[in-house]
Image (tube, helix red, strand yellow):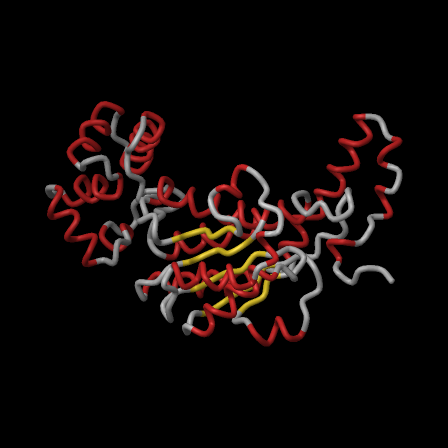
Length: 300
């Protein structure tokens, strides 16, 4: 009897991949990857609901917490790690939990995903509560660690979501606040969910957190204005954002950014309202951090 999980089924288009040339293998994998964006797009409504839950959690002082194992866990940790340098957030705002702990990021910890009690313990360690949104990632839909974590999160009153790449059961749909299930089809190499399923996962997580940050006022137009300068690359980016949004020259942008202690959003308000750093920050606080409310029309 074939495995009912789509992620574990054999792909008829790649049954003879071991007989192909390097170019033919590249073409085959690329043709399969082209299915991913469409599959994710078909889950647009569920992705938007997850985005709304994340924003509600943030506005209540809560967090987005990803939970996964293997590739799924690594992608959650990766997305969480990329948010602070991009949007100037507190590292606690988006967190990733992976079965096997930090060591699993560098080397597979086989068997760690099988212990549901470890997932529950991770939720206890994070002190998850009603203000948080916990998104479980398990492309096969069956990982015990993830189910254990989500069960405990719900016991503590948190909203929960589930991201998988196979047919969701009715129980899964009725248990969680949102279920995202992009049907990318069987993998080129049977069961290798680091491929299409992993790509779909990365796209979904990118969309959820990017959308949430936009809705939280971290973006002006399409500029990442909540950026904090912490390295040369971000110094250059911050200066270019100020130049783009205000029309000022590079030297002026650099000086203004220095006066704003390296915070682009503060620098924009200082320039647009002709105020000092402290007053600019106060205006931003009063506007909920949304630059467009302080400076209508700027950045578009």
